[in-house]
Image (cartoon, rainbow, N blue to C red; front, side):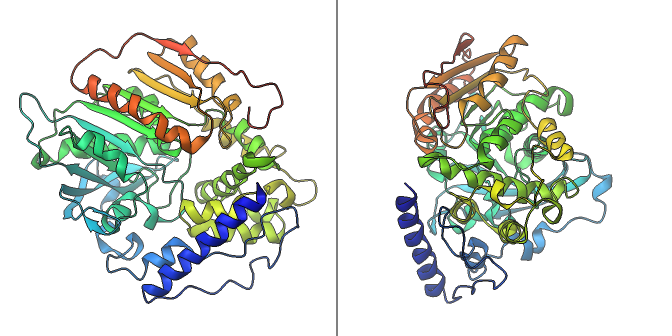
Length: 446
């Protein structure tokens, strides 16, 4: 499996190199500080070119260089969801213009510590007429899973590289509007509760922009994996944080519940395909260090080589972040006597941001694979049980189809139908908890 991963990774790097050279920008040389070699049992890929380096050569500026994203001088005086500025942009698929109306809103929200921030959302409205009621809205949270603002959908929608764009078609074809927020903010949080705040504030912004005609629309949330994190956190926080935003329901899949358990799994070497999960801990460390620098302090916890890997991951999209971290367990880069599990500040952050701090007060559809190499069932089912025990309006089922990415595709059609029905006013169906774990104890990723 490691050999297969390296074959695929090598060709991906070659493709990135060709794209970069063809665009006229070349590819950045490897940083001499980056570890020149790794233990023979690990991923042997050298430092990869990053997606932001390639985006820099495109005519559409990345958010860090686009003044439209700039903070307003009076940000602290704005209410959550208040619009700072708006613009119309062209949505593209692989660079080809897509015939929809897209309006972007920059709005005020809050970071994980409650400080005021601004972030963006993209509202896509198809040309299909809608009569008889306000046009429904699907808030689509992409699995951004990145550490650079150029990876956010407000940018990738414009350049045509939003990886989940094909999934929007099922709702656009029905005439629904789609809200696609940058729910990680400018600094790209990862599995933290401010994701839910930014989703809810994006919907406040949609309602506040009267030119869209969506102020009274029915709203549903959708997201898989990292997108499910933003969606379900918004559903959890709705009652306390944004009671003015009414949700018809939330559909998610492949989303971790217990971040402590997930970190224990992703930190260590795993056999076969489950070894790819190592990248999630590197990505999580890099992202969480933005907002919890004292807890996730690479200089205190990691060796020099580990610090270099974290520094390299500070500005990457999910593709090269994954290739950098797969089959490279972070527990082999801790300083002597140090670990995540023995660092109280780290455990406090992970516990505080694990799901189940609140119980959603609107219908939820949730699925998870019987075997998921990135997010084991053991990190999910206790949260499902907590929801169930506390009266959540829940429909949970274990998909019999294995593998994380496969279930992003397999779970989409049921979620598409369910969301389409509830947005038309149909009932969400009875509560269901069909969770099962038939894999034997100790099976990798069980």
